[in-house]
Structures are given as C-alpha cells and as structure tokens.
Image 1 (cartoon, rainbow, N blue to C red):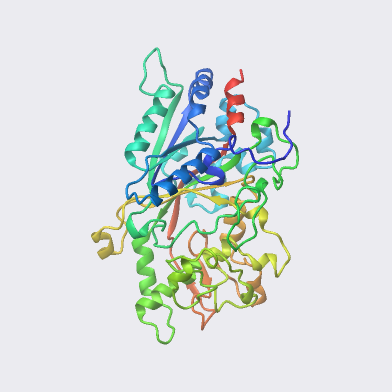
Image 2: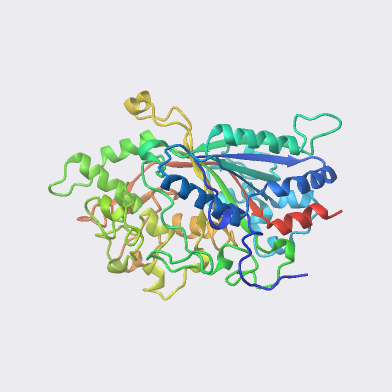
Length: 477
C-alpha cells in the first residue's frame, strides 16, 4: 500500500527533520537489537514519547513566549527521536528495499563507504581509522535533546528502562548499548558557533509548504527533498506507507583540531596592505570558510567583518557568488560555503538545479572549550568537534555527493578550470591532497597546503521513520 504525495502531516514526521529539536544539549544513544520480538513490543510503548514536528513547533513557541516574559532561565524541554540503519531493519525482518534500491550507501553502511568518503584507514578490506565503537554493527540511534544535562539524563534513563536496560526477568532488555555520546551548544558568546569559532547552521534550506515567509537567500526546496513520499522525492516509485514521511539521517563523528587550526591561521596571514598580522589571519580564516566568524559572508563583505550584516536575516544568506564567475578575488572557489552550496556556480553559469543536493543540517558540538595548555602549546589535548547530523531523501544525491564530488574534488566548482586553475579541496572538510588556491586575493593562483583540521572518527547512515511507520514496524510479526 502506498501513499500519494500531499500536504505535510506534521503530527507524523519526527521533529528533528524539518525544524530541529530545540536544544542546549543533546545525547546520541547508539544500540544493537538483541531480542526482536521483545523490541517490537517495547518500541510500541516508546512511540508516544517521540517528539513530532507539531510538538517541536509548540516547544519553540513556548520558548519564545518564555523569553518575551523576561525570563532569564531556560524552559525545561526535552525531545526524543529514533532512526534505524539498514542492519537494524534486517535485524527486525523488515523489507527496506524501498530505502536501499537507489541508496547503496545506506545498504552498505557508512563503515563500508568510508573509503569513498575519503576517511583515513588501511587494509584490504579497508578499515577506517575510527573509534572502535563505530566499527561494530549499529542497528539504531535514539537522540535526546533538551535544556540541560539533568533533563536529558532523566529522559535517557526512562528510555533505557523502556527497553529493559538495567531491568530484571520481568522486564528484560531487548537492546544492547554500543556507545553514548553527548554534545553541547557552546557557552556564552560562542553559542551557535562551532569550535573553530564560526557561526554555524545559518543556511539550512527553507521548505515549501513548511517554512512561512523565508528570508532572502537560496531557493526554497520542495518538501520531498527532505521528507520521503512528497514532491521532490528522488525515488519516483511509490513508497509503502511505513516509508513515507521519513528521512535519511547521516551521522558523522567529526573531531576538530582547533589549536592547530588557530596556529595555521596565525602562521599564514593574508598579506594585504594595511592589515595587521592578526587581521590577516582573520581574513585567511574567512576565506577558508567563506564567512567571517560572525557569520557575515565574504561574498558581501570580502575584506573585513561586518557583524551588523551577520545579524540581518534579510542579508546574511542573500548572496550567490554571481560576481566571481571566473575569478576568486572576493571568494575562493574552494571556500567551504562555496564548495558545499555553490549557488550561481551551477545554477546561473551552468543552468543546473542544486535542489537535490540540499540537506538539513542538525547536530551539535561536543567536547570542552580550549584549555590554557592547549592554547599555549598549539596542540589538541582534549577531544572536541561536531556531532554532524543531516537529513535528506537521498544520501547519494545529498551528503555523499557533496562530500565526494564537491568537497573532495579539486576540480570543483567548474568555474575554476575556466579561470585556468584547480580550485583544490574544501579546506575544512575536504579529504585527500589538501591544497587550495585563492586564499590571497592579490595572488589568486597561489597554492596553499594545509593539514587535516577535521578528522572523521565514526558514523553511520540511518532512516528516521514516521510515527505511522514506527507503529507499522512494531506491529509486524
């Protein structure tokens, strides 16, 4: 039985997909299913705890009202979602052919596709250089978001009890924990910024039929780019009802070399006349990322930061690289935001739509702030980075394509070859021969080599089913 595309049912779509679960902290609980029959019974009891998109919108309204009343404390809020890997569906005896037929990465799992993504590793067969927990089979992940560690830990305890962890013969466990990872929004003025210091999550796609009056910027996408079974879903074959209103969830455990990144900027300031070495280093960082740390795009403010622009939702995403068709004085071809969302590079100069490449990025930072010793030594001593999560209706056309064919491809965007240069890799997430051109606007063909700043240490591909889908899954024999 299949469902025809139609209006979005916000009571059926898990809350992290379209809106993002509100959070100051978030915990990812990865597990294996050990007792299929019991798990399905316990899953049926768990489903009412799952936060839907409708509930997320209510939570966001409650947070807004709480702030308007002048409250300085955080509103107690918690949200729970769940997603399954292909191995999880196999374990549950659920035929997920509708999810695997056009998505080999989902079927193989991320460990098997890590070499294609550029992750470091060795051996034949290839084994990625990952944390050992992620070299195990992972069947599913439960993500819990909330206002505080206390709130999230309480909910995690409830979830574990629901699935029998720590129980007895009357309430046995149906799952086994693989690993649990906690992430936190950074404190104070760094809230919203990733660990290198740049404002993050600015340019997620607006969704037609969901986002009302989106701000100027990239074209809104059809709902099917993010939610299965709707207009824009690249899988044109009808999906069964349990696979409608879901989304693929890509998880990446990304470690960031922050002291080393800062030292690299300090050692390689852009030598523009009138700039101090510190200002030249800040400009280099902006040209690597494509935005200043404030979030202001260098396409609009190329040589100095503009915090006022960064805070203006009408302008902060309203740029297209239109002036840089065959040169990169304003923004390097390989800058991170240009590599991962090339805008005019494809849409205008080559008349190619990039709608199917758009992804909804979620996730959260993990690890402590830099210590004085790390700052003094310029060496990472404590694990920190990004728990990267994104949603889309195709891993192949979305995340995997962006990483493999854009970020890791020295020849992308095609404007670079027209300018007679090889753009190089994305300096933030690109994997391979890590060089790029364009960091010095006065010598745009000069190559700059750089070490690894972001190191993948684990990950998996999941599918986040709808509420109805979860009910159907729990009811199967």
